[in-house]
Image (cartoon, rainbow, N blue to C red):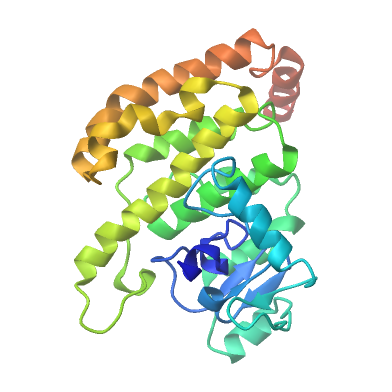
Length: 269
């Protein structure tokens, strides 16, 4: 239970989850290396496993519990943990270099920021897919609106069909664990992170069908049947995509003409 409120399960530590991402993490919120992500937390925790509006009460209680800490704290002892600003030299010296964390450390230097989100999309590498979903949810939470997020959510839900690939070194396991079983469980860590993004979009846009998307996947989802869930997604994702486009079009926000003119100018010079 503690791990659900650790840095591992926070979207600000994009490339890790309970079962994904060994070693150190990186927190975008505090711009800090996370040496022990499973045993640290902070008052800005934003859970990956469930949409924010479902766990809002628990998150507010957690924030109150750690309100006196301005930075990262130990989850169990409630003692402050030193912030470690990211340094490429430091992570190499500590043998903690990770290419995805390296990218994340440069995220805020990328202008415009949405270019970075799009660059992380469309793959089958499980950790990159987790990073993409976390970034989309963080972006949407920061903007607190669907208008600047619909294109990212459309991209995100297309990845429901991608079978994530995890290397042995990508998953968190104990001695004696069957790695294939751990990888299978890790798929659900990723999927719930992605699905939470769709539901949060439903919250911001007021689209009930997306807000309670889990109710439409009860067959495979309730029994954690991956193949069954994929079959249901094959039906639902096109419907969800059409709903997002229809809603954004009706609101005059679906790639408005002025925006298209800018893109045409950039592409043609």
